[in-house]
Image (cartoon, rainbow, N blue to C red; front, side, top):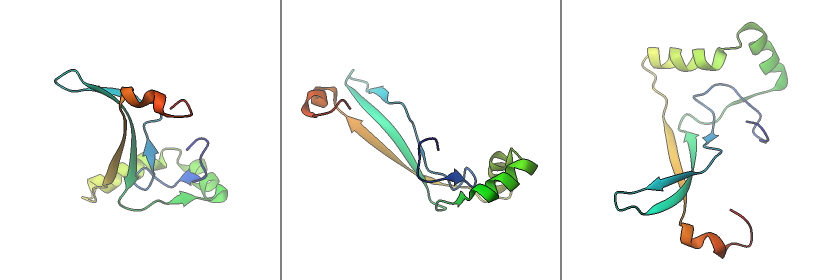
Length: 99
């Protein structure tokens, strides 16, 4: 979470995420839109303090991947809500900033 106020994610299951870059989607008719993606965990968001992160990563730098693997292995399947921000190219000039 570079440049974020959320802190250090405790694991991937409880971490918000975004596509960072925008993408161009094209449908079967050749119509295009620009999109950005954002996903929010249904398990809630959990972050670590600097002290917690230092202690965990000193012992297991792969803790987030391991947590995700172990959860799925145990039948606890994480879920996220996916949000799509859509911009029609025809609307690009309607903003007073560069989207």
